[in-house]
Image (cartoon, rainbow, N blue to C red; front, side, top):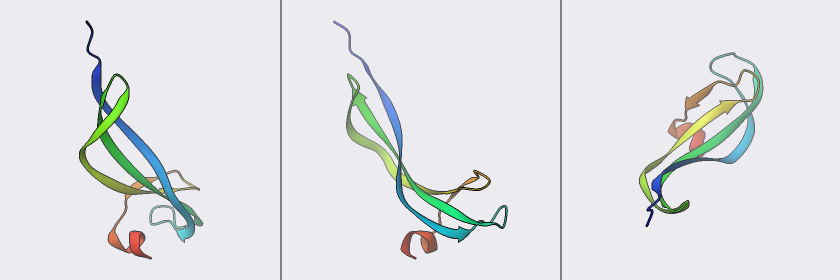
Length: 74
């Protein structure tokens, strides 16, 4: 019998809004991305392994940076 298990990391786009990028300085669409890692058994995600993290991705330069509390609330 084979037991297939592992970790799966998924990125989900939570929202998109136009903001000024901190890296390139261009007013472009910034995507708020939620990254979560779950334990999977037979390719079925079962439970989270570590807490979710949030990132901002610039639509102009493609830079991905960790989101702070201001980006999550505003």
